[in-house]
Figure 1 (cartoon, one colour):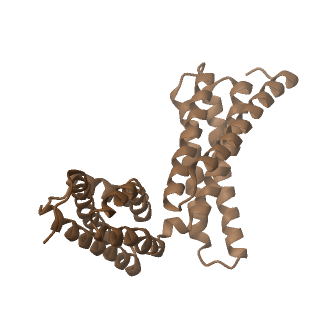
Figure 2 (figure 1 turned 180 degrees about the horizontal axis):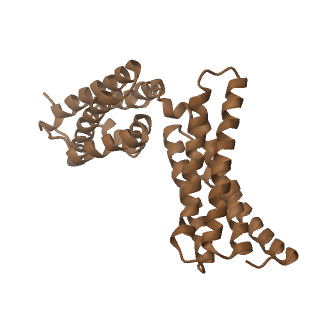
Figure 3 (figure 1 turned 45 degrees about the vertical axis):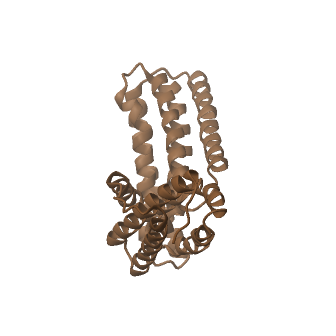
Length: 293
């Protein structure tokens, strides 16, 4: 017979029971489309563990719960778009606040100690077993995106004052960006080949695609705004740079367990500094060369 619990403990258990049910279904659903048998097996083991935890908590609440369809759909979409590793670890990060709740339960529910230990140790080990292709090429994507941010941010900032026309700036940036995309992709291919890697082509594709997407996003303000609004386009471009860095850094911090703030500040500082320096280079070039477009 389960002993009577305090209202606070029962409320915590009810919330945990609901979370375990949803997470068991999410892991099982993601396993259906995750590539690789080992990944599928790992996700199904996680699903089984969460379901077992759900059954333990049900003994205390006596409630047969219904899954949260919206939460399940949300994480399935995240897994499809951003990868199952990111989705699983994002869900794990959302459980960090539960550790204090486990400490509260320990005084009343002895089983909570075992569940907490399993959450911290066994599940962490299972997460490390996940092997997703796109994460193996994060280095290539970072190379492509980072190079594009630094090089194109500086070039567009310099072009902005030198040309003072959004269409001319966009044209120059597009020509330079596409050329640089092929250059970076081919450099990555040759570097991977020289290292004896069999995935050289795939690696160069990740680099090239990341570079090209970054180029398109940075040029976008110059294409959308009027010819005379080049300064607004410049500030919009810098804002896009910050958003790209924030988004990609957040993705890496979740998927690979790295710290967000230091990486974000480092990349932002480099890109913005290059833009500022290049802007003044553009001013100087226009003045000393006597070019008037």
